[in-house]
Image (tube, rainbow, N blue to C red; front, side):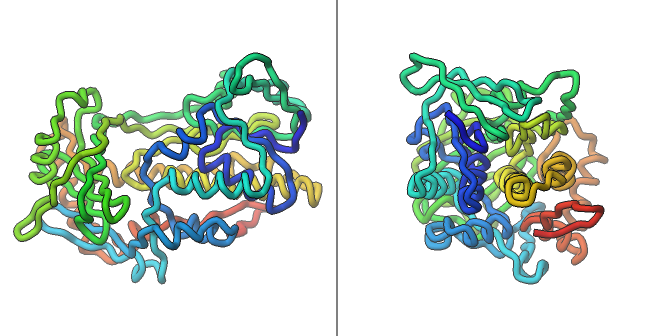
Length: 402
């Protein structure tokens, strides 16, 4: 089979790319190793920047998000048993964030692609990339029955298949540049059947460790605890989890409401960047190229930003015969990626309790929180980064904002 763009991965990046290309009349095929039920049913966090909200609405896939998502105009930072609100809307000239889970975004994009006649192959296996240094790269894979190896010949391949997918592995080690930081803590995340605890997210710095109070729906809440990344979830009974949450976020006159825990797991935290986001006709996007700790709420939004650059470059290639954006794809994306890494690292180190730190280092951390919550300039910086920095595209030595 043949297509213009072969897309590996039906996460937000791959689906959004296919959607944007379809709006420009450019055909694509998506390959996904999991079932539709799996990708739509895997519950993951979702905090959308203003630019992501605007893109979903502008391209016709934001209706359900606007109806069911939760608009937040700020967040609260808690430390020393006090809360301090950061008013995003006031500090950024009206920008907001939307709490709308990633799997809900995926549902909306899958429905849009299938309604438009888009080709998505679920449950594929043995995906491999070939001839990516030529003008006719190929993707080989087996369909669900696994009986026969098939091949897609395309002009471009978009690797949107996450950290463990085959796309990044197809780039030779001799040219691949990767950078990583592993943090000494993990997150124990739970979904609880309980009423919303607060109108906005609460980020709590506590002597016992970080905690985050978030929400998923009027009935389901999402909470996180800083834990040892090597701990076993079996060591955390429901009672122990609630006890620790109460210790880290409850205040005089305010208490979390307990409820049945319906899901819990522990994830490690790291920052990762593959600076070789383009090799030949292969372009990496989203988690296949970069991972951020979730403290800054940047993962999905970075993926969407990559895709806007890639979709623009591919559209220019077919409609104008221009390759400048594609040639500079890595540089354009990495400017925003590294800014998001900086912000995510800053939020993570400011809010988490590193038990290897000296009392001096801990004092500096608390001073940082005091400064951020007392300086308008510092609050504005946090707000601007959280709601999303502008997406800039370099063209002929000029920065064009889209």
